[in-house]
Length: 187
Image (cartoon, rainbow, N blue to C red; front, side):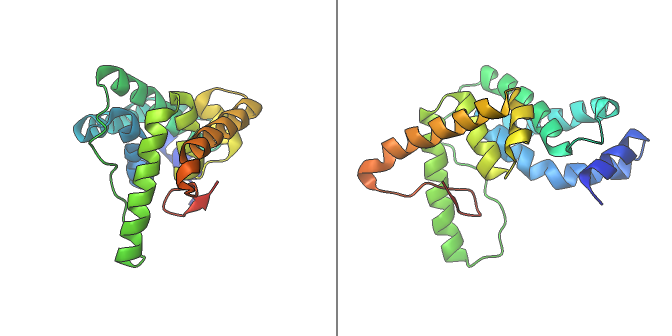
């Protein structure tokens, strides 16, 4: 069943359908928010607030549109609130996701990705980082990112272009490829 179908059922009062949406998006929303909070407890609280807010606003969701950008828009607002409340710590690590790959390969990829995400978070403006995260960690399309960030699709493309160039310039001396996410999407 699609996310949009579950949202439609949630609008009709089906709590089981909404619980399935929470199950599908819980870790993804937490990871997205954690990038801005930098503190596990704050990120968990903001994630919970995101789902509470989305449940309260589910009647406003248009099932003809994609559910993920709608939910990530709410999460982005909650992450901004979290970021304003607490300055992120560079010492804290990203939460790990479960993967069925070889453990040693998985560990090496995670360490590289975490380092790259830390560099991106430290050096990029918030909106560029958010665009990168949604594109590569969430595999969201340009139109979805544009809806989440409330920018035009062209603006999102420019944000991604500038963010990739800035990170590439920083990594040039080390000649490291830019690889984001568990899927290893090269940019």
